[in-house]
Amino acid sequence: MRIRNICFGSRFIALVALFFLFIPFSKSFAGSQTPPDSNPSVMITPDKQFNYAENLFSNHDYSTAVMEYKRFVYFFPEDKRVERAMYQTGMSYYLGGDFKAAVESFKKLVDEYVDSDYAIKSYFKISEAYMKLMAFDPAIINLNNLIVVAYDEDVRDEAYYRLGWIYLETASWEKGRQYFSKISVNNQDKYRLEKLAAELDKEKIIPKKNPKLAGFLSVIPGAGYLYCERYQDALIAFLINGALIYAAYESFDAGNPALGGLLTFVGVGFYAGNIYGAVTSAHKYNRKKTGLFLERLKDNVKINLSADVKNKGVCLDVKNKGVCLSFQFSF
Image 1 (cartoon, rainbow, N blue to C red):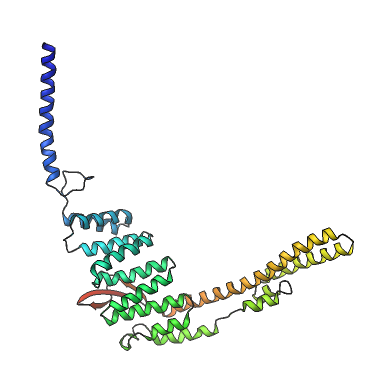
Image 2 (cartoon, helix red, strand yellow):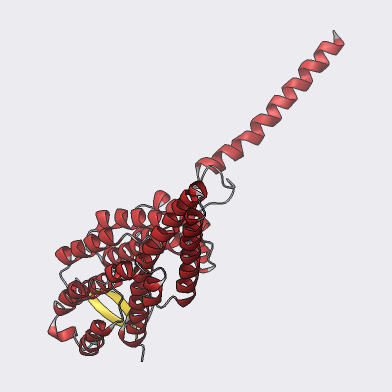
């Protein structure tokens, strides 16, 4: 009987202790706005949460910054910094190299805020993300959508300017010129359009090779490569094809049609490869020369635009809200 009383007393004391321990814990958790996985004794505030996310972003910890900006938006949806937090979420994805997620994040901001300053900036970042993904058509569609909704002439002009360069990237010279010509008179000097037009006219003298001619010349093994200025490939094609043709001829002449047929079959493969390789080389030559022209064009006249409210630059008045664009000129 004594042992039972002792056990009962011990259990009663344990239950009382747990009860008093649980009360302050539950009050602390219920009275704070801490996430379930956080320390319940630490109460988060809008300033603490936002500054923490900003600090992560500044230190290039973009993956964690994404989570903290989203946490801020979730817990403080009425805070005036929510829009910036959403923009910074997109920028964190972008700078972290997740361009698909960046597009979706920026689109969410645009859908919610339509034509605010951060929404305008998001349009531009969406097109940049698409360009990183080599998705030219969506980048073009996105900028054309911005032109439709933008009230500010400066914003539309920048969209025209970016569209012009997207078309130049795909060697669509006339399309590029068309979009540059849509830029308003007030901004033509800002975008250096006179110099751009003069440099763009040099596109007509970009060295080019005719792929059809390269294929035709390859009737003589190696001649197509020679036309495309691939001299080593021309020599190799000539020697291999010449050797196979001669070996096949000698085999037939020596009364060995089986070997001659085999050598002919192999020779036809090399001969066809010689023609195909010459045509491909002409295309590669043209892409290389076009790429070099574009690089020189960018170095000489392209303006690097960076939409950032923190940077000093030319500020666009978007419905009385300042979006600053920093301009860098290459000489």
